[in-house]
Image 1: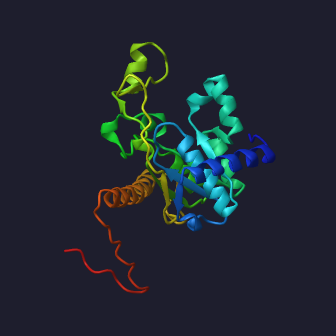
Image 2 (image 1 turned 180 degrees about the vertical axis):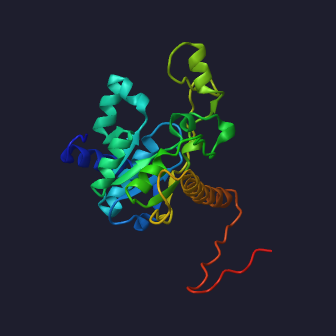
Length: 256
């Protein structure tokens, strides 16, 4: 399931050198738990931007982060080989359970390719549909969920239209993204990744409790949306002041 510790470490060092050269910024890495944890992130075009973030996290914390990949990748031999070399595993419940039981950090992108190939009009929108499997995996393995907000990835390319509908029209069986211009133009932008506070899943109910699963997913979505909105507001010149947490044993003020 792994490309081997030496090869994985070599790839990670190379990616981290690229990340530092591109001034990729990762904040909040100290919030990652010492044991198992499920990192949940928004997805932009491609995966290389997140690969840079994971290399930075490894350099900052010494922790390797395993990634659950799209099932489609394992149907294409050359892509399957590249994914394995990069330390990505097929995103099955069995693989997620095996990694979490070994107290690993695991990255999941619930939006998958549909979110990665979304048109420019839907930048920084979470398109998770009816995907709840990652929540059930966290509950099943008592693994805290760590929200990860990725800023910059959605600005790299301008994609238009529905890539899935276009792929069906051409009978390809895979999504076919189309750039806004004749050729895909890479827009220079800084990549910034923010690790949020871990969300505990202990005593949140059973994975078979549909209401508990939906509630926990909404909490994860809300945490990522809040970080994205704060950062996008700062980029637009609107400073965001996060209110301090209330002191311990103090009831919050009522909302009026």
